Picture: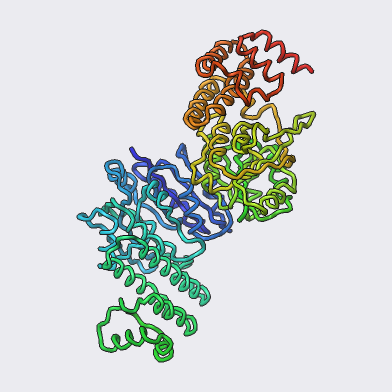
Length: 322
Length: 314
C-alpha cells in the first residue's frame, strides 16, 4: 500500500475549515498523513485546527506569518513524507471516496500524477459547473496537456491532481512565492514533465464559489497585481518550455496560445498605461504569430501588433479577446 | 534571509521561553526561527504559539512525536535561509552569536563555521572545545571532534545537495550527521570562542536510561560509519576507538550487568583493528583517555567502575 498525504492551506477560513477537515475524515479510507499550513490567519482558523480531533492520524500543523498560498504549499511539500500527496484549499471539500479511489491507481503502477474531476458549486446562484478532465486512453502527462490545451479544459488547478512525492521533489517543482495564479504558472510544467499519468472519471473535489474569496476582489491595484503576476508567470512558463530539449513545436505553439489567452483575459481589466507593458511583452516574445484570426479585422490587428505595438496601443486602446 | 534557526521542541516548557528570548535578543536580525514541536505533552506547544504571534519570523510546526532526528531533518527541509543553525530548546545563545557568525563569514564564504560552547551544569560552567586539532586538514578535525550538531553554522545547500541527514529515530544521530557533514563540507572555519550555552540537565534525552535501545543504536550507527568512511581507514579506526571502546563502554558501565555488552565492544575492536593503539589520532589524546581505553581493552571493569566513582566524588 502506498501512503497518501493531504496538504491543506488555510488563510482566514474559520467558517469553512471544519467542513473541509470533516470531508477528509468522512472518507472511506483515511489518508496516512495530514499537513495543515496556517498562513497567518487573523481569525479563529488556527484555534479550530489546533483543537480538532485528529484521533491517531499522523498530522503536522505549520503556523507562520501570512506570505501567500505558494509559500505555504511549498512548505507543505518540503515536509511531506508519504508517497503521494494532494492539495485541498481550506474552503473546499473532497468527496468521500476520493482517497480510496486514489489508492487503486497509486498502489498498482508507479504513476506520477492521478487526475480527478472537479466541480464548482455556486451556492448563491445554485449552479454547478464541472471540470471534466477524464481521458481513458491517454497515459503520459504531455498527452494530457496537449488534450487539455486543444480542448480548452480548465486544467490548471493544483487541487485537481494527486502527485507522486518523489516525482515532485526530484524535479524541484515550486510554486512562485508571493504571486496570484500560482497554479497557472506551475501545473502545465508539472503535467508536461510527468511520464505516467492517469485520470479518473470520479468527481473528487468540490470548490465552493464564495463571494469574499481573495480571488474575487474588485480593487483596481489588486487587478493590476494579478495581471502582472500572470505576465511574469507567462514569461516564466514560456522560458521553461523553450528549455525542454526536444519539445515538439506543436506543443510549444499550444502553450503559447494558452499563455496568450490567459494574458488577454487579464489585460482587458487594465488601464492603458499598464496594457502597454503587456503589448511589449507579447511583442518581445513574438507571441502575436500564434494569435488565431477569424476575421480580416483581426488579421489587420495581428499585423499591426507585430510591427508596432506602440501604434496598436494608441489606436485600439485595449485588446479584446483572441 | 541569512540564517534559519532550527529548534526541535519536546517537553521543555521550563526552558523554552528563555531559549527563545535569548535568540530574539540577538543584535543580528535577518533570521527565521523554525520551531518543531514534536508532540509535546506539556505546555511547550502553547509557548511556541505565543511566541509565533509575537514574532512574525517564527514558523512553528506541530506534529505527532517522532524523535529529534526527524524533526531536524524536517527543519532542514523547511528552512529558507542560506544557512542553518541548530539550537536545542533548553539551551541559550549569547546575543552576539549570530552577528559574529555573519561577520566572520563575510570575508570568505564558508560551508561550516564551528564555535565553542559553554557547558552549563547546575553548579558550574565548563568551557568546551567543539573542535580539536588532530591535523592540518579541517575536514578531519571536524569529523573526529565532538559530534554535536549545535553551535555549528552550516550552509543549507551542502546539506541538501549531499543528502546530509540525521538517522531517523536513533539516539546517536549526531555522530553520523557529523561524519556526513565533514565529508560534504569543503570550507570549514573554527572560531575558538563560546557563544552557546549548552545546558546539562539530569533529564536530557541522551542522559536518560533507555538502555536496551541504545545498545543496538550504537552498532547500527557504527555500521553506517563503515559505509561512509571506506576511503578513510585511519579516521574510521579513531572513531571506533573513541565511540565504541571509550564512550559507549564507559556509558554502559554506569549501569549494572552490562559487562557482556562491553565485552562485545572489545571483540569488535579486537577483530577489526588489532593495532588500534598505534592510531596516529589516538596517540595525541590525553593519558587519562589512553589509560581508560587500555583498561577497557583488558576488560578490567572493576577498576574502571572504581575510577568512575572516584571521578564522581571529586
